[in-house]
Length: 136
Image 1: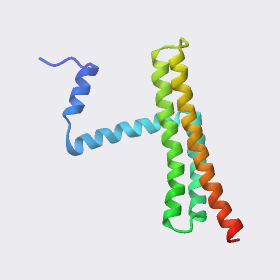
Image 2: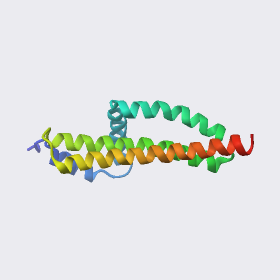
Image 3: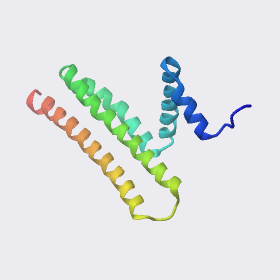
């Protein structure tokens, strides 16, 4: 007799996967997450700006460490934006009614994005100042 195809059985099947099969399935889920993230206006904007900033990082960075740190700041913004979107989706799934805890969760996610953007801007600003003001 076949098992009914419900969420619990699907989760159990996933947990039983090992090795390359598990890795391939996880990769597919990650690609779905990136596709869903692309559907968010803020993520799309930040991803497009990230391409420009990654090119700028190659010019600004004096060595591979500086390029890596600048690149890491850019990637961090995208990661935090995806996590913020995930929080918002989970809260929205619960329901449209207003709740203080939902507001707090969404506001804290938004604050995390702001902090990552400030870190990125600060890192690029310092690198630009160092390149222009100190070394011409």
